[in-house]
Length: 500
Image 1 (cartoon, rainbow, N blue to C red):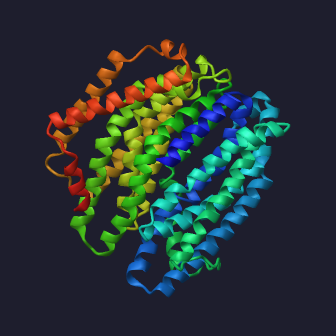
Image 2 (cartoon, helix red, strand yellow):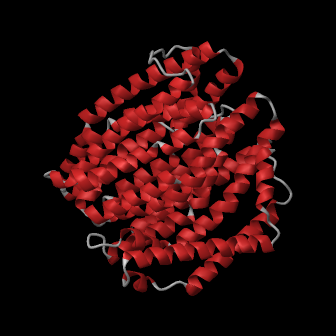
Image 3 (cartoon, rainbow, N blue to C red):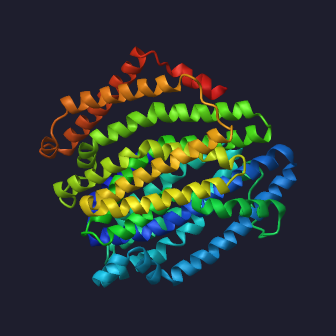
């Protein structure tokens, strides 16, 4: 929560200092490329392959064997990342041209050159942040969840400092953000090392791709490279297509995606972080009933908190964007355009969270092939939706296509778990759906009925906007949980399911 709140502060500072123009478009492209690869090498495919094998070593082998696995994985991963980072820095202009091909066709050489210059600084971030995710995986496997969850705070602090202190001192101010990203990567990895030392698992970095554990992780990771990052691939494809649209489209998508990432990070990532080691432990113990109960708890919690979060984001999209970002550099047109894509992203929030809960049901059983097949279907669906929706809805169409493909992904993951007999939902699920949807609709109705029009939000100061936004979020939450109580739903039911 601290990390996500500071992320809001970071984006508020970026919007007020830099606005939404060609320079910010260039930075967001330079930042998205290593960020996408981080999801593959870091907390994405690598984590889903690494944690189940690590848990098996922890439960069934000696500490010396566990330490050997950590040393060899760190060395092998570090070596691969070093090579990839070197190639990324070397080929920065080509990579930018591929991911912002619309700029090439438009002859926007200044944007391409600026993005390539910043990519040379942001690409090495991949090395350090992936090693940070590796360290976080080790800590999570030992039930040390707080340290890895707090670590992203350092990225937010570095970017805020870069925007406010370093940018005014540079010839091209936006380049300061690229320096902030690089420094943050180093600090985040260094921050976790003392905690690994306390566990006596400080890595010695010994490359050994033929080590038994490393080989299993690599075998599991190869298909997961694609499957676990379908959403990120979709977002990158959005960036490519958005480069063909009007200037500012990439920035509007970025800011709306960041707001959508708040509930996704607080709820979705937290659930995924906790549920994967738990499911891996239950699979190693061959406890099928507890495995199903854990999945059921994750899905119940997702519905309980994800549904109102999605509805709240949709009805409060304009006020949220206006409260956080409206300024001289980010005007009402930017607010309106970003709110359109935020509403489109919020439509798929529940599906994004469901994917993070359902996918570990496969990875904990060391099944990475099935999510690959499902991911391919979702990726194709996303491209079809993109081509259908980009013309009438522009950048908002790209966001809506991502949401629709996420529902395809989640539905197929759920169906696979049911068909394989891994997950057995309870009989009360249909009524639970109805009650939560009615409570969410009631919450939305109250907010839409009483909330001031967006034009009124623009006419008051930022302090007043913040008070209004906090008030309506509070009103919405109060109405939602009062309606749940009226329908007979108690939070105690969800805690008991989690303990089972």
